[in-house]
Length: 308
Image 1 (cartoon, rainbow, N blue to C red):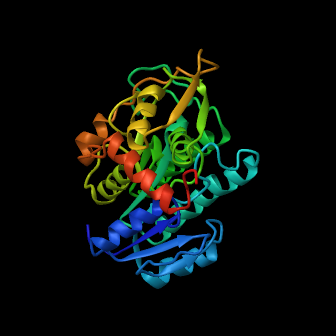
Image 2 (cartoon, one colour):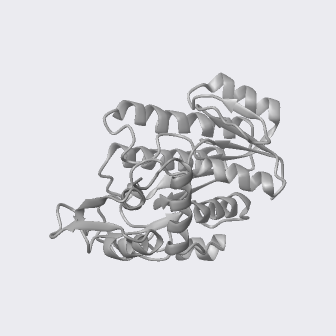
Image 3 (cartoon, rainbow, N blue to C red):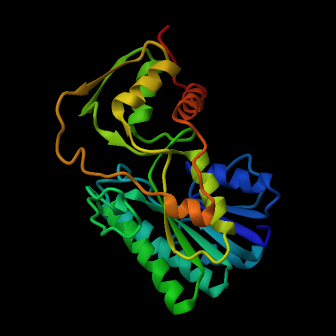
């Protein structure tokens, strides 16, 4: 890679922070930006909202940014769900600002963190990057809009951009709700937990370390034939299978499920990551057991405690 300084937005987040640390470990020149303070990073840090164009412009000019990884924004369909205006202003308006900076400063590559939420309930099997998009949330719609911005800037201004549609991310650093976190927190604290989903409901998780690998590959990839790639872990798992792994990592976990499917529970097919494997060399490496183990250790360090 090694061609100029890389700007990482959302650098305090679940994906942004380990990405910055990985790039620095590889000897890359990095500038980190987020709304939240960042400590312990050996690189320049810019505290800025994605809509703070003047501050971001100054950062681009001051540090001679040559590439951008756009991890910033409202992250996940369960975040700010009651504030759709914030989601749209941040994920659409903020993304537009980042791509305009990429155009003005002629960056060599911009990588966009998109989301599996663009697919919505999707019975197609497998889910390739070409299937029709049916978002079931404002968040999903905002990510479709962000991808459209990437496409428009690529066609009209020849900005070299690539988007990764990232599936359900878990692992150290995740503090927002997800089923794995719910199971682990209850198990660590010695409590029973009931999930309002059937045990046969399927999920497609990806560990944060594998997401970082994919972002690094997308940042350095040459002559990529596509602008959008699916990024997920090794296959689809039932919640029962996930619970069994949690129980092995944290013995004594008692996890209960609803008996019958509800709503659109089983309407997403298997994700196809063959394009990312072919063009990016992406292969998820973190097994579910290893990933849940590292996540449990992080949750304990972050303050989760068992019964006295």
